[in-house]
Image 1 (cartoon, one colour):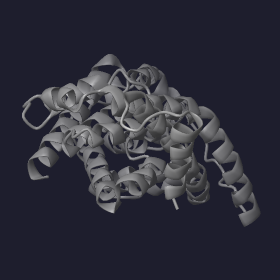
Image 2: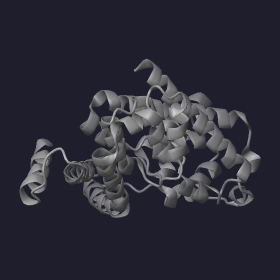
Image 3: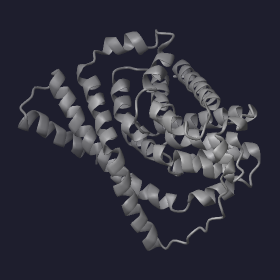
Image 4: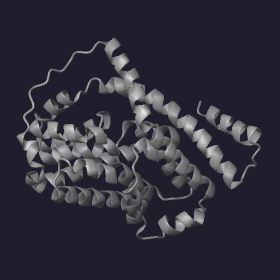
Amino acid sequence: MLKIFTNFADFITFQILGLNQGEHLSEAIHFFIEDTLKIFFLLVTIIFVVAIVRSFFPPERTRRFLTKKKIIVAHVLAALLGVVTPFCSCSACPLFIGFVEAGIPLGVTFSFLISSPMVNEVALVLLFGLFGWKIAVIYLVTGILVAVVAGFVIGRLNMEKYVADYVWEIRMGEAEIPQLSWHDRIEYAKGYVKDIISRIWPYVLGGIAVGALVHGYVPQDFLLRYAGPSNPVAVPIAVLLGVPLYSNAAGVIPIVQALMAKGLPLGTTLAFMMAVTALSFPEMVILSQVLKRQLIITFVGVVTTAIIMVGYIFNFII
């Protein structure tokens, strides 16, 4: 079915615009048109379905569920729930406060905090559609593993004193969980699609544009020279390049697609993608409202180390 987008891009690029195949400009424009259509089609379709799933997991129900589990099980469940529970910069502070005030251990909260942006369910489906199920499964498993391990390590460090003081002073009452009919869930899904698309479309288009430039203009030997398998520090470089960027996982996928097409190893590509989604500078600015500097530094250090290890492991085994 997605072949229709390739054909449409062929028509616009080579018939309407009259560009020649194999040229840098035509390759970049073709990539941009095809991936814009393909990704937004997948986004609209999948976000609607995911929104129905999300409607069964409101934050209060998530908090109640996690407080009843043993610590190891809670880490895993928190990471898994992060995949299907909304998390972004605008919701970082209230969600973090709500989890802490519900009595969820700090490390478990961080497992959720890490997995939710890193293992974005929309990005997971897009990866499946663009790269196949093996890459999607690798992304899912490694993202959850990083979230569980990093959250467990942070929890063992006993850093509760580095959560902003006002967080501990807030007392949240027991919120009622509304019972939704299927009509309510469908209406919620429609609104959720509109809300998500309206917020992420600039980042998705920006990611596609960067991916198009990489695909059309960046020489393959340039990428392989600085981030190829022969460079022992390629993975840390990819992580450092990803931190300043601001995008969600769906927005960075077009860049990932272009990088992999140029021969960038899977582990290095995964490390870059995880750094963009879990360690972005804007995200750290938001979290600084509820975390003290020592805890933010620890969070960044632990997650960075875990991501780099994932990158090296997958470069070694694949």
